[in-house]
Length: 405
Image (tube, rainbow, N blue to C red):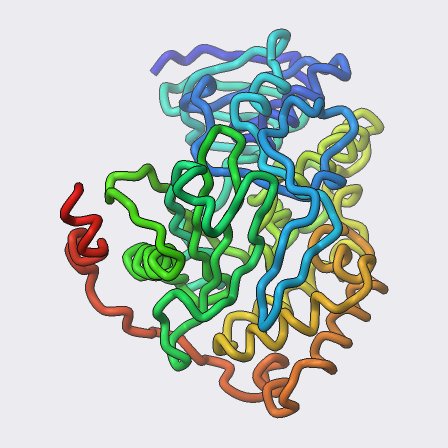
C-alpha cells in the first residue's frame, strides 16, 4: 500500500478510460480543468468494434476517428430497406488518438473505492477531486435483458458475396441462420471495417440472460454458408454480452456521477452507447463548471421519458419470435425519418418516439402479434431456453473448410 495522495486540487477525476471516459477526461482537460484519470491499462487500445450514425458524432471530434462510412445501410426484413442516413465504423486507433490526455494526470491502477470526492486504488493510493465520474461500464448481465453477439472478421474479397465495399447490413433477418421458427430470434449485423476486413456478427437483443456464443457462432456460419462463403476456422473473432436495461441515475449534487453505459446511456433497444455518450460529454462538463448537477443536466424529464419508452421496446423485443420480429421491424422502417431517429438515436425527442412506437405496434401484422409486443401474452417467452451444449469447433465448419484448415 503506497498511502500516497494524488490530485488534491483536481477539478475532475475520471475512473475508467474506455472511449467515453477518455473523451470525458480529454474534453475536461481541453476546457482548462485539472484532470486525474484512472485505469488499469490506460494505454491499451479498446477491443470492441464501435459504430454509429455519422450525424450523432459531436462536431469537436475530427473525422479521423471514422474508419469506414456507409452512405445508405440496408435492413432486411421481408424485403430490403435502404436507410438514407450515413453510418460509420469508428477507428479504434483514430478515436484514441483524437482524445489525447497530455495535460491530465493519468494513473495506472484499479479503483477499489469510488466516492463523491475521493477514489482509493487497490495499492492504497488516494485520489481527491471536486467531481468524480465513474465510467467503468457495467457488470455481467446475469438474467437481465441482454445484448449478445458473436463476430467473425473476414477478408473483404471473401466477404464480397454478402457485403461489398461501401455497403452494410444493419439488421439482416433473412431465413439463413439455421434457427427454427420456434427458437429465440437473432439477426446478422455486417459492415466493412476500413482495414480490409468485414465483420459478420450474429446478434440477439433483449433476451433475458442473452444467447450463448456457441449458438451465435453456429448461426453466423450458417449464414455465410448460405452465400457460399468458406472460412478456414481460424479467423479473428469478437464477443459481446452486456445488459441493456441500466436505468438513468437519480439526480442530486454531491455524488459520484455515473457516465456512459454505467450512467444509463446504453440504448435499451439497439445496444449502442459510445456516440450518445460522446455527444453528452460537454453537457456534463458544462454543469460541473457551472456548479450545477451533471445528472440533472444529462437527464431532464424529456430524456428520462425517452429512456422509459425505449425500455418498453426492449421488453417487447425480447419476447418476439423471428416472424414477429420481422413484422415489427418492417413496420418500424416504414416510419418517417424523424420517427426512426427518435427511436434509434435522439436523446430526448419524446413526441416523435411515442408516435413511432404507437404506429409500429399499430401496423405490425397479423393483429394478434401485437399482444406479444405489448406484453399481454407470452411475457416470459424464451426464459431459460436450452441452447444445448457447444459442439466441437470442427463440427461448425463446412466439409470444404475442414479439409483446408
